[in-house]
Image (cartoon, rainbow, N blue to C red; front, side, top):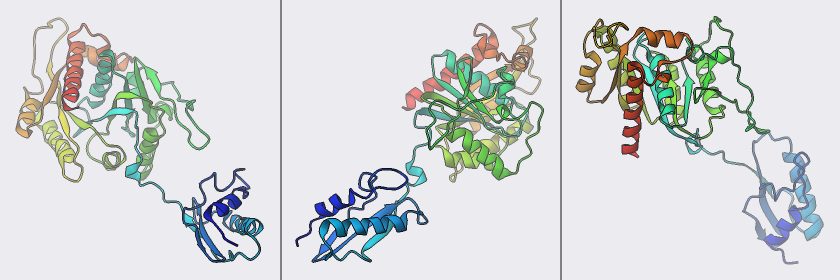
Length: 357
C-alpha cells in the first residue's frame, strides 16, 4: 500500500488529547517531519515539557490510529519521537508592549525628593494630555500611596485576566495609573525582605500589572544603586533615566554615581537629564525671593560637566511638602510657581521624546 503524509495527518486527527478535548493536529502537537520509507512511517509529537504525563498515552493512541487507518502492516512501533516545544527567548517576548516610554526616576541617595519629583512629573504629564502610569519600585520605602491620598486602596484582579494569567488592576488617581508594594502591606508595616524577594515583587508589579496603553510609565526607583536597578534594566527596555539631586556637594557626589550607573556600558541606559530639586527656598510671603540654602546651581553645573541636559530646577516651597503629605501633589495647582515648574519639566520631557522619535 502507498502511504502519504496527508493520510498520516488524517489518522492523527482522530487522536484526542484527554485533558484538552481537541485532536493533537489542531493543538499543533504534530511536528512537520513526517517520513515515509516503504512500510516505515515516522514523525514527532510536540510537548510543552519533557515530563508531560500524557507522553506515553498519546504515543500509544497515535500508534493505534496509524495502524487503524493505514493498515496493520505499517511499521510505526518505535518510530514516534517526542520533541519539546521551544520556548521563545525572554528578549523575544515584549514586556509592556502597550507602553511607549518607560522612564526611571532615580537618585544617588535618599532624601533628595526623588519620589516627589516622580509623582508630580506623572501628574504634569497627565495634565499635558498623556496617558501615564507610575510604578513605585521603592520597595522598602513606598511613598506613592500616601502622596496620592490612596493609602487605603487595595488593587483587585483585572477583567483583562485570563485562565493562564492573572493581572492586577492599577489604582487610578489624578489621571495616573499606579502600583506600589504599599498597596499590599498595612500602613506602618515594615517590608523586611531579602534582595531576591524584593526584585521578584517588582517583577510582578511590572509584568502582572494591567497597564494597558500608556505614553509614559515612570518608575520611582529606590535610592542609590541596587539589585532592583539591575533587575529592572534586564526586565524592561528603559527609554531612559532621570536623575534627581539637590544642589549640595554630598548629594551631587551620589548623583554622579547614579548617572554613571546608567551610562555604564553594561547597563547602557540613556540619561535623559538631571533634575535639581530644592534648588532654592522661596517663602510664601516673599514669592519673588530666592534663598540658596543648599548651594546654588550645583546640579546644573554637574549636568554641564557630564554633558547631560538639566531638565529643571524645582524650588523648595512649603506647599510642595504639604501637598505631598495631604495626598494632593503640587503639580495639580498648575497656576502656582511650583505647579508651573513641574509643568515645564513635563513639557521638556515631552519635547525631548518627540524629537527623538
